[in-house]
Length: 461
Image 1 (cartoon, rainbow, N blue to C red):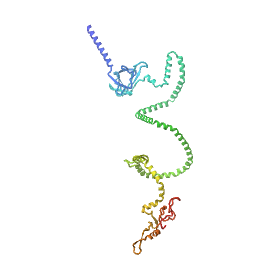
Image 2 (cartoon, rainbow, N blue to C red; image 1 turned 180 degrees about the horizontal axis):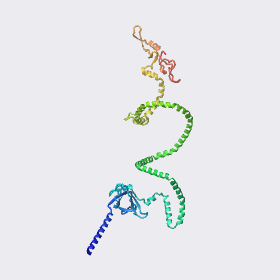
Image 3 (tube, rainbow, N blue to C red; image 1 turned 45 degrees about the vertical axis):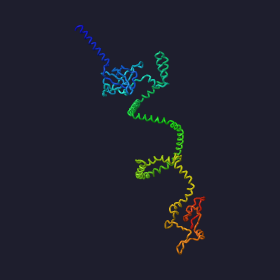
Image 4 (cartoon, rainbow, N blue to C red; image 1 turned 90 degrees about the horizontal axis):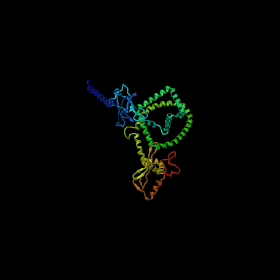
């Protein structure tokens, strides 16, 4: 080979090497990519390493924001570790507490039996944990604790500054806390079996809660709704709580008095025990057929209380009671004026009529008789009921020989009427139209001052 040919071959090898390097730099040595979704990609940048058990297996190729506002980090994985399996988890870690953009993603590979994640696939957000920033750690402490933490940090800085004597003296104050902690952990580890069982039971409880996360979320949501409802009624709730001490004091007094009453009932219970054991058992035996026979009645009663349809049971009847109550008891604007309910108006009307009703009440039998046959309620003898006949006297008389009506001369009419007519009988007592009862109960005078005259009776009494 000539010198010129050797030079051409060397240039060709150099070009191939450069092209290979460019390809490797551009492609990163891998064509397999997955997207890790996480809540925050803070301080992650393109080029950060992707490791497995401390070994670099790829790098961060791109970072973007998804449609649901989650960070999407595109990972380029070396072919030796592609494809990743389902169940692969990612943790964003940091190389040290100092420095910026010193993060890397550590992968915990899924099991060999898991399905492969295809090229361009996704590791879900639930399997990717973001790094915890140092300021987030300090944010968990309140304003009172943060100065104490600062003093602790200053203490350790004094060790490095050569002030070991002062720092050693300060550490002596930690001895009681460390001693107490030693005894605490000694007690925890003393009964190792119980401690293991406690941890196992806690893990099972946590697993059961995780399996019922939807129900637990619904419970929390309903609890939040309950708290909101209580918050809207906080005034009434506060008033109720304010009245609670008085209620509890009165209830305590009631229970104290009840205790004394129960002590008084002890002799009764003691005396009743023999009777209950001896006599109630046959009673219960007799109640069984009664309960069995009562089933149809109870079934019908159930239908009476609740039946399919409208306006056909007691529930529907109770539903109409508010409207009846408004009409019967409540005042409202009716017929252009404010008017009370029907019941108050009826009560006022009855109150005004009470004197008349009280006076007429003893005459109820006479009134029933008047409605019956415009006379009295009737009388009875050995043959049954009969009616009393009355003689009508007027200004004419009957000729016994000829059978004709003859007018009574005017000068004789007063004498004729006076012989069979009694006038001014307007104040009779109840029952005065009947024959006198053997027990003397009629005429009936309800009271000595009752406004009636027992002497006013029909003619012939």
